Figure 1 (cartoon, rainbow, N blue to C red):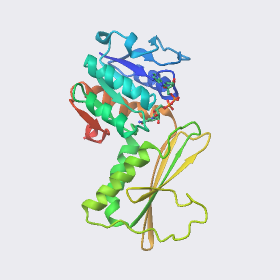
Figure 2: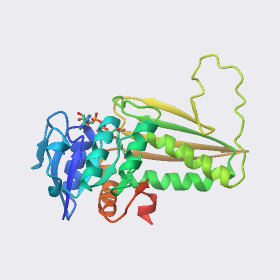
Figure 3: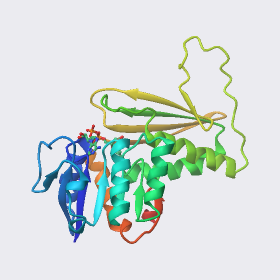
Length: 255
Ligand code: NAD
């Protein structure tokens, strides 16, 4: 039995994971940890901080909170040798360093997107990248998302840039010379343009648009519901207790 504590347990993802992970055979959600009391406890205990938790009662901490929350989770998990799965995005370099330090003491899996279809779409994008000179990403999320561009689009842009570099393909120069309105061409991430859309009603969506002479290829992934992340988080929870160090992304866990 894997005993799980969800940090950010009162949030949109925390509540969805409490339902989803709680239904997985061999898992039990032991605690919801949050600065706010969760609307639903789903038979788990509520703790306002990991420090209130007896480390002997949890096998894995799953963090979907804030970058500051991730730093606290990393230090608690390192101190108590409890494995950690991180889904929170928008970490600064210093916050990432805190995660890396924790991973020298316990297993950590960190992924910007746990949806299996999205992980596959990154693989497909890496396959296509050497064959198309132009590529732009449109990421679309709900209107409550606080970071932009999405962690997923940053990862996807880097995967595409690495695939092009490995194939010896140069980064194309954007021919747009006049920016009548600043920001009209989106943000540059490793030479890949990323556009962010925020609208009510959306969950998490991404289009990767490749263009070549006379043809285009669009790879689109949609998370219609937060349950789309459960399967990938469950995969990480199963793997993390026997995978020392830091694992970035769940691609390697799918093989
Ligand atoms: P949310 O705002 O609904 O929930 C965040 C929760 O964290 C809140 O309940 C808040 O009270 C709590 N919190 C804040 N600081 C805390 C702390 N120090 N300790 C404990 N709890 C704390 O946000 P959300 O939509 O659930 O998203 C949470 C994070 O997960 C975001 O960073 C989002 O980008 C990320 N996310 C990742 C994936 C993925 O697949 N990796 C998918 C969806 C969302």
